[in-house]
Image 1 (cartoon, helix red, strand yellow):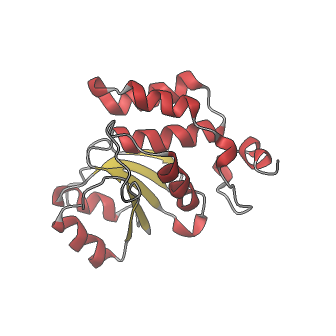
Image 2 (cartoon, one colour):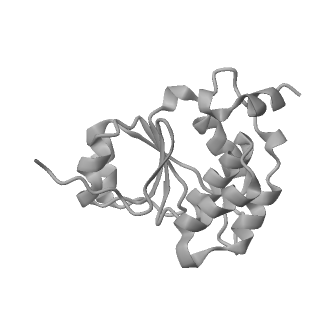
Length: 175
């Protein structure tokens, strides 16, 4: 029997939706058990070659979401544009099982998941506690502020959104 080791900062966000940092070859047997269809890659740099080869072998699509060319992101945070583009993938059940990841699975991934929690109607304390749990001692106040101020009215929730999104978010999209 093989050893199954999850990637750093791995977590199940909702049924069929996962988060993590960039996996190494050691993590591939674990990830194969998830039967992923798509990965949202939030890091500005390319994933390592071993990961690219493994993704191709597994038939998993990698979608890299980065800032638009010419934008200068000094704070190293994720932009509203990237979050909204990510939601177009996150809220489409055809992409599931799906994983959101960045290099360490802390800040960019944590911000995306924090904004998702806000869309789900989580209270801010619980949302930030989840962000902090994955960020560890490297919490970024700018990311927490971004999550707090994120305008969920900008999110287009499709009729076929995941059931776990909650009725509140789906009703809000009708406004």
